Image 1 (tube, one colour):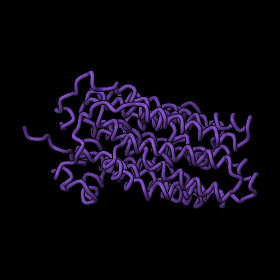
Image 2 (cartoon, rainbow, N blue to C red):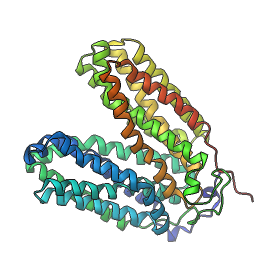
Image 3 (cartoon, helix red, strand yellow):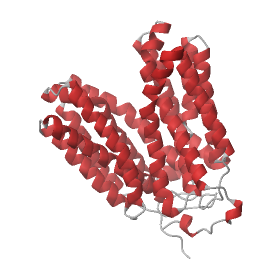
Length: 409
């Protein structure tokens, strides 16, 4: 399948446990998602303290995302050159120090600047995480490692609001920022202390790859295989944004669904997504048909989103169907990562994962404008139809991505 499975393993005595590395990578992904959420629960307190408008405080979030989107692919190139673990350490250090200083310095524009610095730190997580896992985890376990990595990020998103508000209640919003910053610095030390196991893949890119039709630079990233993966990630971001951010208001406008019921359905969707990710990690260890698994999961998302758009399902059925959508969304995540991995030449994991996961940022920019416009136009049904159409298009992208062929013996 790839050179990863055919490379001899280093002697046991010269390697550290990949379990420690996987734990450190998952902890870093936890911090990544924690920092993405950090301002949302604390926004009212920060805004009141500085006396700024919502537009002005939104500048901090926009700065973080623009910097991340612009620099993530160059960060991937840097990671392939200097090493993933050291890059992950510096990313965590930058993010942790930025939020620590934002809590200590009493200046709104300094806070905006620190969000830009944190955005630079954020660029390393996806390319470095996936590079480390791809290089050091055996083929038989890589799918489960990917699923744990995704689950770690989801856990960071889930725990950020309650823990930040707990710290705010005790120390104020500045104390919450300082506590979050210290957490990042602690995880940075953990990453620095974990020694890399011997790599299972060559540390250099191939001169030319038949699947990508290119060498290891920007030309490779513009190949059909990589661009299809980028489009897949953009569409996933659109689907997730539509359901996670707009389903509650769309259900209320479309069927008069009570806010409590719609929020319960959304909570169940998010919980089942996390469960689905773990289930998907087991699935990818039992089949190499990753495109088929992802395609079937996407079809499930098409059907469930269409059901929500078409029928007033009331409480029980709505919760069940939304939960099913979340489960399908979670199940495809490890297969999604394996599809990218199979299209990536050895030694190019950082730049390829850095490039394709930029699709999350691009989709995150497009989706709010799209779904917001639909709601403003009085078309709440089209929020769910749009999600279903994005999933349907994604089936075409994910099932046509070429794999890297086996190297000739």
